[in-house]
Image (cartoon, rainbow, N blue to C red; front, top):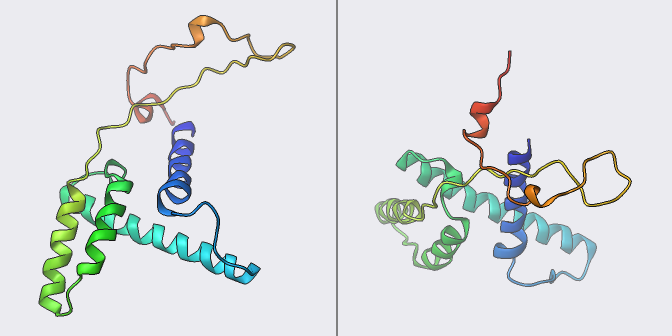
Length: 147
């Protein structure tokens, strides 16, 4: 579950750091704040949906595409969207092709030893050999056996 939790943290980072351009919300009322947050969440979903479609066409995992790269492409290309149906279809295909080129290298498996620094704990004390633990020898999914 640690690896899945890390993916959630990355999604929160996408919203807070990359998508929201200002440090504070602009709304002056509680209802306006809710509306602005809903707009940010909807826009995040739209970016992720484009990434999913582009990854599906290339046979990739959607997590292998760059969110920030896709966001930059969308900010540039949305203003250039044409009006005619045939032109929109061609524009959409070009958009998906461009987003599909924003491929990231495979993520490394993250590990964190179960030790803490605090004294008087039930867990072992953190030692120098905990700072550089060995890399996993197989992907996380392959190391779990469900019977």
